Structure formats: C-alpha cells, structure tokens
Length: 150
Ligand code: RTP
Ligand code: MG
Image (spheres, rainbow, N blue to C red):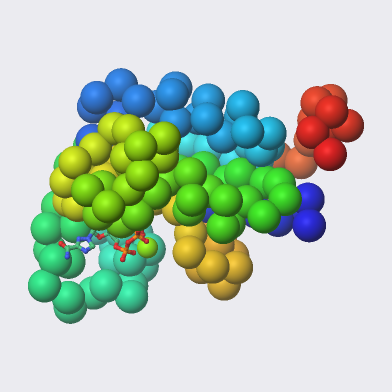
C-alpha cells in the first residue's frame, strides 16, 4: 500500500563523510515521501532500545560506540513497499556483499561502518518509528508529485 512507512537512520560515518544529501536524494528520486527527519546525537539509552535484538551479542559494544560517535539523521519515509524496497536500496549488512548501485555497495567497505539503517519488517518499522519520533514530529502532508508516481 502507498501509505506504508519505514524508519531509516543515516549513521555517523555517512554524516562525517558528507553523504546525507546523497542518501536522502536517492529515496526522494525513487518517489518515496519524507514524513519525519531530525539531526541529533543518539543516547546510549535510545540505541540500546533501538538495537535491543543485538544486546549481548559480540559486536554490540562496538555497534553502540559507532552509533553514538557522532550525529545521526533519523527519518521516516512513506510509499509503496517502502520497507522491503529501502532494504534493497541499502544493500546487504556487510558492504562487501552489497551490490554496486546500492547505498552500502557504493559508499562502504566495512560491516562496522555501513552508512545507513533501515527497518527489516513491518513490526520493526512501527516499533522504531515510535521509538525515535513522537506523533507530533511526523508531518502529514500531500505530495503534489504523487499523481505522477502512482
Ligand atoms: P541495520 O539494523 O543497522 O539496518 O543493519 P542490518 O539490519 O543490515 O543488520 P543487523 O543484523 O540488524 O545489524 C545491525 C548492525 O550491527 C553491525 N553488525 N556488526 N558481526 C558483526 O560485526 C556485525 N553484525 C552486525 C552492523 O553495523 C549492522 O548494520
Ligand atoms: Mg537490523
């Protein structure tokens, strides 16, 4: 459905390397609609909730250090099949396994510096959107381009 929403988060390495505009641009150009966005440093408390499924794993402390090392750009995007499509656009978790043309495949080479997060399911998307954004921070608006996209 066109109203499907996902949570994406541009990670600290991408902010430092100047890829914020490029990443946003890929989702805009594909035809997805931006619903919410902020620029912030994520607290350990928030990141532990966000990556709850990974707490206790061998790579967790490194992941926490990486994700809290600088500002991030959390966002909500909307559109047809956006959860699955944005994961495809990101590429595989390990950038060495990401196809060229994907965000990770084009801009990264290390698993611990993989540029951008995307929700992996409907349930994760709902949980992550609610975790990072209040209802007031989500902007309800009509895109004038929509009738040319759908
Ligand atoms: P993300 O949640 O960030 O979108 O990444 P993902 O779904 O593709 O991968 P996930 O399994 O959820 O892992 C979350 C992040 O943890 C780091 N990681 N390191 N073995 C490792 O060293 C390892 N495994 C995962 C990556 O930064 C990954 O994106
Ligand atoms: Mg994940």
